Image (tube, rainbow, N blue to C red; front, side, top):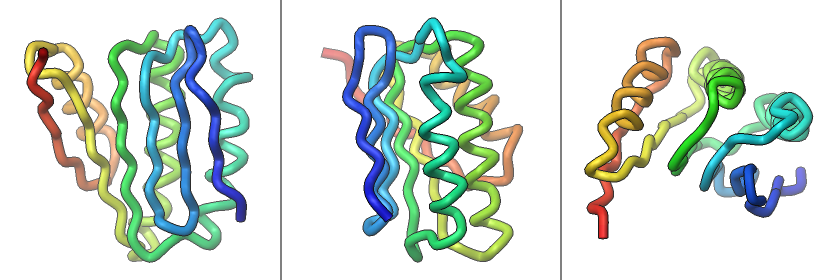
Length: 127
């Protein structure tokens, strides 16, 4: 299976999903006009990946800002990855946020409460 690499756009996050290492990253801002269209490739890739995942998986979410439609897409990604837990495949979600951004931390906590995935919160010191 090929990695999924989508470069960061003006309103879209960078996506780096590596099937060999099991490291999945979403980085930047997610405010695309066509959220469904942007994330369609991600969902297609994940539906294949969860059939033959790496033994250890990490989803790193480094989002600075996202709109409500993107929040639904992020929840859908987490729901795809929940299938790994059901199959006893190791998965860890790393929710990255800036130390001054309490909203992003709270949003991560909300996502954590909605899915059966282990979350780790990673605070980054603002410059």
